[in-house]
Length: 306
Ligand SMILES: C[S@@+](CC[C@H](N)C(=O)[O-])C[C@H]1O[C@@H](n2cnc3c(N)ncnc32)[C@H](O)[C@@H]1O
Image 1 (tube, rainbow, N blue to C red):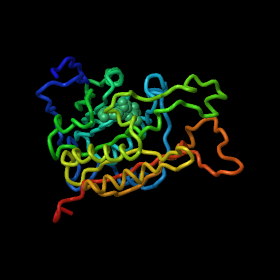
Image 2: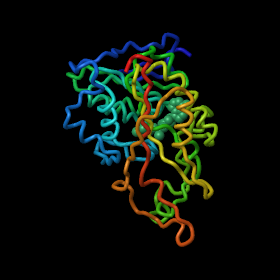
Image 3: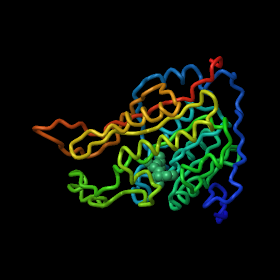
């Protein structure tokens, strides 16, 4: 398909010459062995395995704009831990562009992909107030995550970070008691991103895990040696069964050559509102929304490169 729209920060329906010209080398003067630009004090604070974040006014909380965003502060922390200034961060499922905003804030180049053109326009509008002194570049591209390798060269990406669709979790009518009680406008709505057959949010867990594996398989060569790949994912309940998306993902990515380094818990209790009662008094069910996993993988170093 020919290039139809090229805006400052976004590419819609990219054409034949797709390779992006983005600097991937550090612009900081950190030691070569350092994995980030953090001071020892900042590093120390990141060692805890349970993290908590707050939304700020720039965050997208309106579910009509996008149904599932993470906070800018979460994306910023991951970016600052696993990349240096000037390097490239990739988000294969960029949604409203939160990763791109965080990359702009932290002086990283970044590329994000999404199937949905409305989300790419949203990314563009969020990136429009770039500070003129910021030399980094953030680009949103409307394309399938399966085509990312057409845009980027091997060994150029320092961090792959995303929150993917959680299989078909959203692809059903919202019936939560809390939404009904609050006369929430999302009650009985399907908050899915799209019904596009390439959209991973339309797949059941088995198909989802394999497709995630297929996509991440093609992304591994793009990562620099020892580059990190962090994925935000919850588990879920479906027809009284626990669906362990995080286990399926770890198994699938290990098969594709990624190595799991850390499991971090994103403690979301501070942002969950109006808890309804589930299961009482016969069936104990923890509320899935109170925490999610941040699975930290890396591309294992080639032998002899410790
Ligand atoms: C959980 S959302 C990401 C939200 C993002 N973290 C934010 O803060 O806005 C997942 C996104 O994946 C997109 N998506 C689904 N299947 C895709 C595919 N095959 N290729 C690219 N994007 C896809 C959806 O349109 C959706 O916006």
